[in-house]
Amino acid sequence: MTPREIAVLLLAAGGVFFAVVAVVGLVRLPDLYTRAHSTSKSETLGAVLALGAVALSVDLGLSTIKAVLLLVFMFITNPTAAHAITRAAAEQGIEPWTTDEEEP
Amino acid sequence: MTLIETILFGAAAAFVVTSLVGVYRVVQGPTMPDRVIAINVIGSNVVIVIAVLGAAIGEPGALDIALVYALLNFLLSIAVSKFSVERGGVL
Image 1 (cartoon, each protein chain N blue to C red):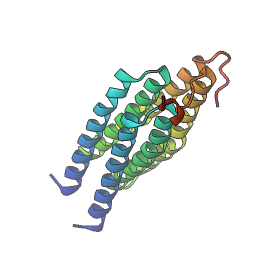
Image 2 (image 1 turned 60 degrees about the vertical axis):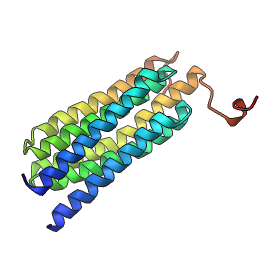
Image 3 (image 1 turned 120 degrees about the vertical axis):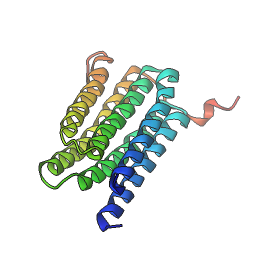
């Protein structure tokens, strides 16, 4: 294996791992804010790692620049979108989940 | 098929599987912002899948499609969050 193949393998495996973490949080966590917390961070890191693998595996040149631009764009906009959605939800009056509601 | 192509196809398959699991929250989600967050995650996964598959089959034009899809995904989240509150005071 060349160093480039090892780097692509590590980046792709890391991206898949963090995407799985994000989706597990999305399915298992109890309320909107915790789900947004899980998905915004883990999904952003997974996207950055996977697009880093793409940037390494395409031919050097314009495609690399496009992949890095896509990486930077996802890195900026993904948390911004999650922040906007949760802030809109807070203004709609959705209450955060607390442990007090579980007890009778 | 070289090793890098194999790795990229495997990663794309894994991202597709995580997107399909995320559909559970779109169907089930009790409130509307839950569904919007799940759709946002699925859209990010689709962007990654397009870029990874484009790199795997040696088609650099797919990166442009992924860039446009990422823009539309961000626009959807901002638009929904802006028009679902009274005076649109998000961000």
